Image (cartoon, rainbow over all chains, first blue to last red; front, top):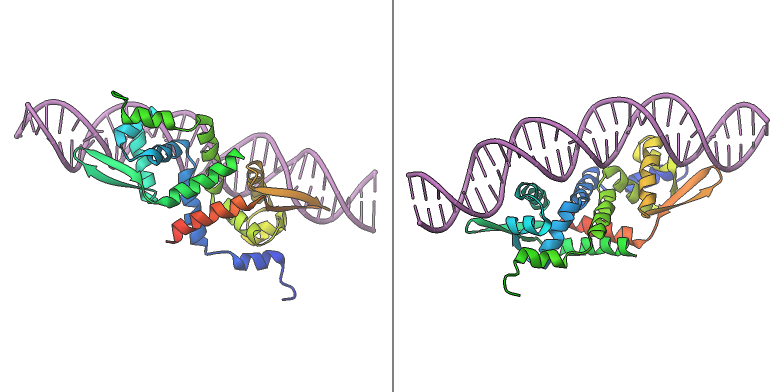
Length: 107
Length: 107
DNA sequence: TGAACATATGAGCATTTGTTCATGTGTTTA
DNA sequence: TAAACACATGAACAAATGCTCATATGTTCA
């Protein structure tokens, strides 16, 4: 172990580069207030695109663009119901991650 | 309650706008692979700036800039030790948040 | 005190990101 | 089938972001 610098040690224990990249990408999705607000809205109940847009006082287009990102990250799911598309939270990871963040900012 | 749209209901239950902004700002900090890598490095042990830079194969300046952001968000702490400044994880929220994200991307 | 070392920081630049605007796709209903 | 409605999407543009380079600040030691 002699001659092994701390930097080298730590470097060797780092997870795979691609994993870290994906992880950063995930947090990046949470890192926008519009998307956070959408997630909080879906916290309450599943909703159509136009309902979300009305809740947040934003255009349908802006919301739709953001929903696409949330869907790609598997944070929300969607199903068609007639002319509308109903979005909902994908799983409880979303709640847990947001709650942890919430604890940090509110303490 | 009649005439109360779903959008209006949800809107009223939304947390304070500024809180949501701060929350997004927090996640934004996690949303960069350099900062994620720094945090993982500090997961192993506290380290000086140059050790971190060597671990991640990046310039001292780039690391220092990112450490400033991490420090402002209270995700890391710092103390001087001679010529060096030693950075370390601020608290266990960091670990918890990252672990939750990790679960999401590795499932 | 001055040189060497460790870190911080401001300016500049290329890249990324979020919104708007216009329009396309898909579904219902008259 | 045509019009109306709900949503998706591409292009364009302004704003934010991360790195580099040069340099400033702070600490140790000869």
